Length: 126
Image (tube, rainbow, N blue to C red):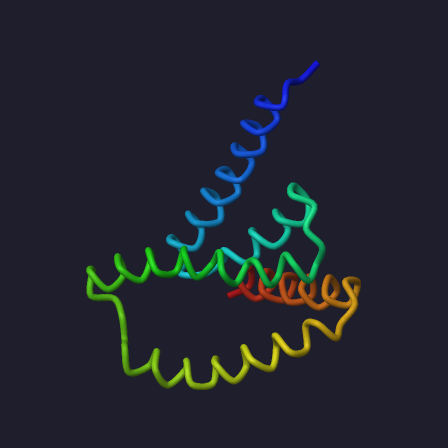
């Protein structure tokens, strides 16, 4: 019989493992955390599509702040470019968040999976 303390420890190890893998990818590639953390939340922590995508944004923010520090420290940031792209990103983020609540979980999975497949094909043949 598994004790409650052992279950909590097991769950904690799952949290840490998912964060470690997706944080590593985010730090290494400058992105990629979302492509790992969203399926991780859905498959291992039983989040629904809406919650996993919304929670991933906050989780990725934490990864990004750490990565940003190290990229900046190494002189690899273009602040001018980042500000220009971020202007559109803020609007896109707002629109995407509004749309998320209107879509079914199935539609969200299809859109997300399609983007992952397209990105994989482009990276493979680039």
